[in-house]
Amino acid sequence: MRLVLVGPPGAGKGTQAEVLSRKLGVPHISTGDLFRSHISNQTELGLEVQSILDEGALVPDSITNEMVRKRLAESDATDGFLLDGFPRNVAQADKLGEFLAVDEHDLDAVLEFRVDEDVVVERLLARGRTDDKEEVIRHRQQVYRNETAPLLSYYAEKVISIDAVGEIDEISERALAALNSLRDEK
Ligand code: AMP
Image (cartoon, rainbow, N blue to C red; front, side):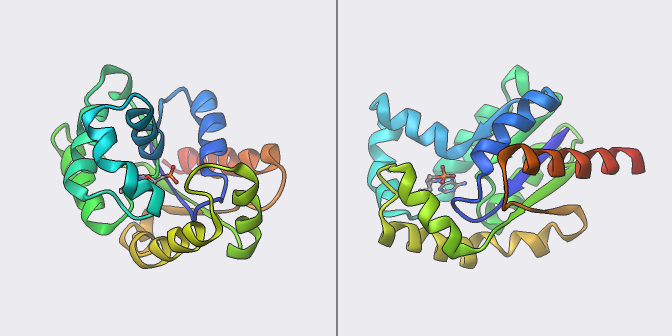
């Protein structure tokens, strides 16, 4: 299965992606995790993007797209993947479409995690990442509204929306049930 997860910062995408990746047997590809790993390993790319992550801004598309293209070309992603944090804007979504079209692949679904913004600020502050300061969180939410939320119209026919408020298990059940019904329809 080829899936994209979309949702505002703090919607629990990363946590759900871990669970879904295990249950569906596809790799969890998080662009945020890839960037953070470059930063902690102090690679050239890591040094280039560190201040951008700290501000809560988006890394330029050219850098991000190339990193994703390489990751999707790895053998574990041939038969499916779960993308978490990519695409983050319509230009990246166009690129993803191009990457997949090379092998005549397409996305199966886009899972939207719905939560109220104020609820998630508390959750994020508790997490304590370097980009989890309140003003940076607010900025990331704004970036989400302006840049990422338009993907929901872009992918309109593929979007499955899940209520992402509740216990972790409960939310994974909702997501899996929605994906199963999608599979049954096919
Ligand atoms: P995340 O872990 O998904 O919350 O991402 C953390 C940070 O990594 C974001 O605030 C951006 O600075 C950067 N980032 C992650 N994914 C992307 C992307 N697809 N495009 C641009 N920047 C990204």
